[in-house]
Length: 323
Ligand code: FAD
Image 1 (cartoon, rainbow, N blue to C red):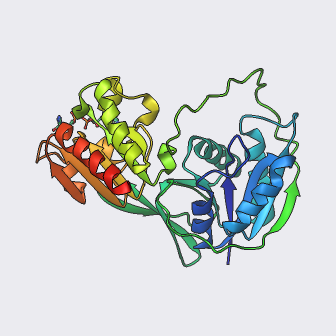
Image 2: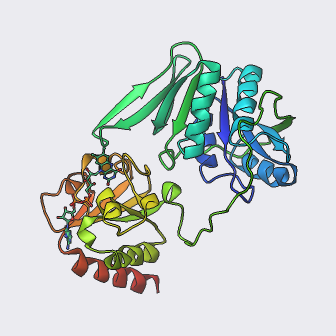
């Protein structure tokens, strides 16, 4: 089996990002997953434990210190060295802002090709085939690289494959010397997460509101349904532009791409740019008063009705059943 290099991001608390199990699962479906994680020495033991549970065959830890290069330089240089050492068939990263940034810089350094925003992987004749959902999910395309390294960013939530737990061989790599800092960070202002809701990109349930919600105040209806389901909250661009929801809630082509188990659209017509970010959801429920709204063409369950009448009943019933 060919080596597949996986780059796992870590949270500020040092835990592997939520996408880790899916990235390793995808890698294991086409080869042997070698996981590279950039961390600090005190966080390594927990990290190794989680990566074992996720099925890493080998773990390469790059331990940072105060002097280490910042802003992705250490990650890119370490991955480049790991590519030289393990000659992987492919490098897999999350399609997150960090994953995309690292993927692009690694491709520039190694001369590799990138397959961005893949929703599936397969192996054919020793070539990794990446599957993409394009044009708002209306088409599925495949891409590969004939000879040479392939760098793939995977859409969070799109991969259901999981690897069995393993006992990985663990090695440590010093941050390569050529990872010189390209900038100096003179201060940081941590963003305080005010919400206890799940992260939008990785959530298994997403409830989104569109222009049909009508006002910022009414958007609390979206939040009520989301909270009754334990879901993340999303929005269409029209809702964001109208100021009903913050920009980081936007789902779609120019927002976050989500692939949850359940996506609930409230007052969203289903423009192609919105569908581009949610059509790979496993089950789609849409509530819209217009029976010709395009969202109803992709919905598994569509409710034609006034959301201000339907959603409160839904919330009440869900809360009643949950006791
Ligand atoms: P509308 O299209 O106005 O739909 C509102 C829906 O609410 C209608 O179907 C209506 O019937 C329904 N409704 C109204 N009142 C009620 C009610 N009381 N009860 C039930 N239903 C009701 N859009 C995105 O979402 N994400 C993107 O990333 C994105 N990127 C874009 C990039 C580009 C380059 C461009 C040009 C556009 C992009 N857009 C994006 C915008 C996109 O084209 C649409 O304009 C937008 O998605 C529409 O949002 P909406 O469905 O909320 O609004």
